[in-house]
Image (cartoon, rainbow, N blue to C red; front, side, top):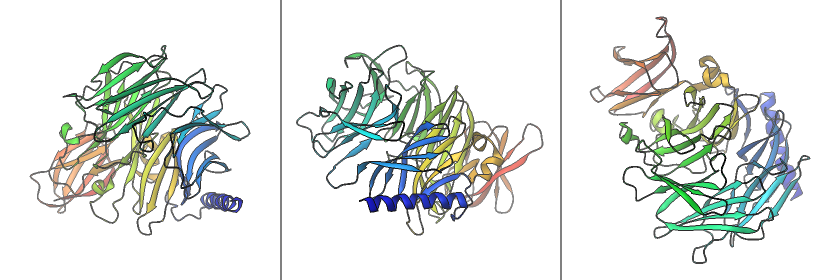
Length: 503
């Protein structure tokens, strides 16, 4: 075992050295600070000035806490879970701070009744694991190994709330359990309904307890509600139909509550045709803002263009620094970059908003050979953000997981984005039929479309995040789209161009 751990450490350190000395093949990506065939970073946490902690999966070996600086160097690691065949499920949460201010996280292990565990990282990087004496209270009639979507919510008194769900064709069971600092079960709430896809949120500022957002399958127009609990897990209020945009959320959602403003932010997939989009795009990504009472304030759409989704991706897709809001999403490049073309792979985008959900910048990453799926985004206290991704080389199927460091200038600046290997505009679906969507965060911009004879077939100033161009009357074939900036000054600059195929 020691030999295995040493070999893993040597591989990681050699990878770091390769990154720092410029020996990696992907040197066209200056923002890629870390790459490994074995390590997937799921969550980030600030460790000290200029250093972060990673909660990571080392494939074939176990789960590790890794310490590195913000440039991917100076590694230290310790394993908190050994990969075995005896654990039927293992779910872990993001980092929190315990009542002593030390980084900690919670996880649930099997294979019998779920056992809640807490891992604490001390100042000298010692990991301590504490198993709660009382198991998670699954009803006796429910299979113990089919629970999923565990979520945690620590409280200032050292207690923690744990929620989870069991879903099948005949029964949807939701449980919230409250444990004191000794790991003893003190309160619980169990609900058997047709409501699904829960999200556990902290209470509104100035109150205690928690909030649970659930999809309500009985609703006709909008289908979500927020159940509000007190400290003893008694239901004190229910807010029905918290969405006002007629959104249908079939697969995925991720909530985050700003710790200072109490505003609630959401990433969710939605039925794109319901927003008058191209019927070929079965779903898109919705980025929304709500106040503390779940009144919707604003939303924008994202370039997510597939009907399938990995719920592990975007597990920590929203983060904050001051008034800035960072969001990260998956783009299905099978649509955005040419259908079945070998260069078409899944990649990601990063958006930066101000506190009023005004888009400051958005960039799109496309690697021609690597399929890249985002796992989390972390707003660095020093500025910019880190994005963790999992992926593989589509030519060799070699695992290629990476961490990218983006400055704020990279997200909002055209030249900086291009220098870092990102695009500032994308076209999708590609190939398409009736509608060509041009997505960009650029302001004072214009889009033009030309046929292969150089004849302009479309021209329009860009006024929103997505410009939907009616292309049903166009002849089948290849078109060139171009995005220019500086429209208001009369001195335009070409900043992005690409091909679009009309079927």
